[in-house]
Amino acid sequence: MPPPPILTVAEMTAADRAAIAAGTPGFTLMQRAGALVAEAVMARWSPRPTVVLCGPGNNGGDGFVAARSLAEAGWPVKVLLHGERSQLKGDAALAAAAWTGAVERITAPRIDGAGLIIDALFGAGLSKRLDAICAETLRRAETSGAPLVAVDLPSGLAGDTAKPLGYAPACALTVTFHAKKRAHVLEPGRGLCGEVVVGDIGLAETPSRLVENGPALWGERMPWPSASAHKNTRGRLIVVSGEMWSTGAARLSARAGLRIGAGLVTLLSPPDALAVNAAHLEAVMLRPFDTDVELEEAAADADAAVIGPAAGVTEATVSNLFALARTGAAIVIDADALTAFRDDPGELFSVLDRDDVLTPHQGEFERVFPGLLGRSAERVTAVREAAARSGAVVLLKGPDTTIAAPDGRCAVNVNGAPWLATAGSGDVLAGFIGGLIAQGMDSFEAACAAVWIHAEAGRAHGPGLISEDLPGLAPAVLRGLLSVAAG
Image (cartoon, rainbow, N blue to C red):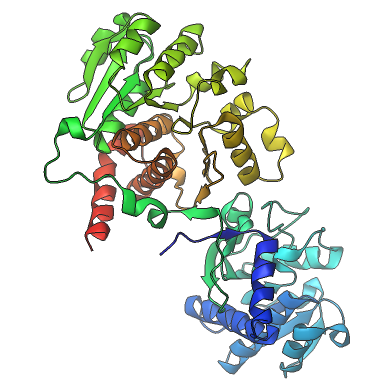
C-alpha cells in the first residue's frame, strides 16, 4: 500500500467534488461521515448525555447525522445550532431535516451537564476567527471535563497552517475523512486534535507528494543483508570526532551507525582526542587526522560520513566539511557543522548534492535558512524550499519532524516520542541516517526511515530514556520491520 497522503484543504475539497461529479451524491458522503463520527464515539465511550454543536455548513450537517446515529443507538443527544435552522442549505439542510429531535440555539450555558461534546461547527474550511459565541462555548466545553470530539478539525484551527485562527480547543478525539490534513500532523494543530481517526467515505485515492512517514514509504527498500553479505559489502561509514573534551556526541553517532547495520564504522579523531575515544570504543574503529587533507585521505573509501556532533563551530569544521565533500561520500551534516556556516550558508550549499542530508533543529534551521520559517505559512513549505535552495535533503527536527528532498518529495513523521527530548538524541539520529545511506539506501528514504526507527526506539523505552540507550533499542525495531518484510 502507498504511504497515507496528507492533503491540503483545497485537495480535499477537490476529492469531494470529484466524487460528486462521478455520481456519488454529496448527502451520501455526509451520511457516511456522520455515521463514522458516531461509530468512533461509541467505540470509545459508553452512552452518556451528549451535546452536538452544529455549524451552518457541511460540518454542521455531519454533526446532525452523527446526532441521529447516536440517538438511534440509545444515546441521549441534544443539538445546538449556530444560526437558524431555516437558513441551512443543500446537504446540511437535508441532514437537519432528518433529525427529529429538538434544535436549540447555541449558547455556552446549554452545554452544562454534558458527558460528551461533539464540535461540528466549522472543520477545516474556516478562514477567520471564531465569533464570540462559538469561542465562548468551545472554551466552556474544553474546560468542562467532558470529552470533546472534533468533526474533521477542532473549530478555529486552520487546516493548512495547523495554527489556531485566534483560538481553537484541545480535543480528545478528531474524526476526519479520506485523509489527514496538514493540521492533523503539524504542531500546534496535532496537539489540539488529540487522537486522530481517518474514516473512509468512498472517495478515490488522492496522490500527494506530502505523505505520512512510515514503513509504507520506505520499508520495501530497507537494506537487509543477503546470505552472502560480509562487513565490506554492508557499507563504510565515517564519523568526525570533536576535540578532546567534546567526543561523546560523535561516539553516539558512530555507535548508532553500527547498530543500524553499517558494516564498517570508523571514528576519525583529532590526535588530542585519540586516547579518550579509544577508551570508549570497541567495534567502532578509530583513526587519527590532523588536517583537512588528512581527513580527506582517511575518508576516501567512505560511502557516507557524519560531521557536526560536537565538532566545534570553527573554521576547522568548515574545512573538514569541504574535505568530505571532495570524497564523494554522502554527508550527514548536523549541529555545529550547520552553525559553522551561519554567516554564509551559500558557501555550504555550493558543495552539497541531493545525496547529502541536513538535520537542523529549529534554531539551526533559522541560522542556515534565515527567515524562511517566518515567511512560510507552515513548516512543510519552509522545509521544501530549504531542500530546493540547498540542493540536499533537509530534515527539520521536532515533535512533527519534516523531511524534504530537492525533487519535492516530503514526509511528516507522526510517531514522535517526547522521551527523545534529551541531550544527544539528535547525534544518534544522525548516525542512524548515515548508517542507512552507507548501506545504499536513498538519502531521502534513509532520513525518513531513521526518523521513524529513532522514534519507535524512544517510544519503546519511555520514561528515563537517555541517548546512550537509543542505539541498543534499534535492533528490536529492526526485527519488527524484518518480520513484516519476510511476510
